[in-house]
Length: 376
Ligand code: GLY
Image (cartoon, rainbow, N blue to C red; front, side):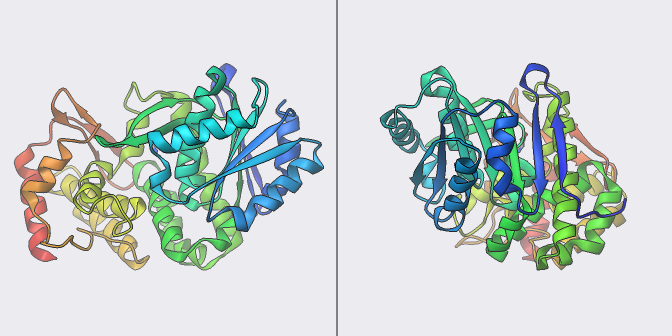
């Protein structure tokens, strides 16, 4: 596959809920034009956060203005704390204060937190208004902005209250990744690598060759990686919009382990979601190898690439008190991916060949984690 710097337009084929993903350098400046073309020419209410607003809000508002779209904005505090019932209530009140109307549009400008929160607010306010995703992190561009998963966290856990509510348009400007801290970029890279491991060995090999350039700022590499990831995500979402089959579940590769790592470290800055996914993906490949399902060389290759990129490729840095295999197994049982009391794992038969398994013996998971904990 030849990497290309050509901006891309992809479709998410969901019948009456179909929409486009526009990807490319400078795409943000065309947001208003794209919204008009998508029939979203009424008033726009931009939702962003306190980190993103100083960087990109003025340019987005200017792009809307240039297309004749009147707009206002709501800025929420940056961070996961905004993705709560209180944060949702505050945002809904702000939208109602601005006298949002049924045919208006919410525009989410930011990373996963803003996208999830604004998407859920759009699903609820006035019983549902259209929304547009303008993702500003690599993680949001390759994953969370596409597919309509919206949610807030509750004291019971992350993302436990939400809705499948598809955006009407996604605009991924790869230039905005230039302002992303390196750690955030790498965390998003883990979700990018996930697509290679789960379903495209050629893409994984391309990432092995081009990942370092992508992180260093190579524009063509960034466009290619975001485009390929979105192509795969769009196809998966079109096949299994509400994760009722096994297709969309494949996007959870590494997430069962990741959930336990994040829960054990407090879902905070100590371990970013993407870092936990990298660690979890390495563990899922290792588990597959131990079960005799995946060539050990493929599991080693995944670990090698994640490690070379500076991501965790085994257990992540431990919380105070260290890792405890029993605690991690218990935390896996609290994940929302548990079905009928059984933990669901995404395993691989090799790089690019993921599948869902519901019958992994817990003792093998425990011994894998115990061995890994010894090695830290
Ligand atoms: N981030 C996983 C999904 O969208 O299904």
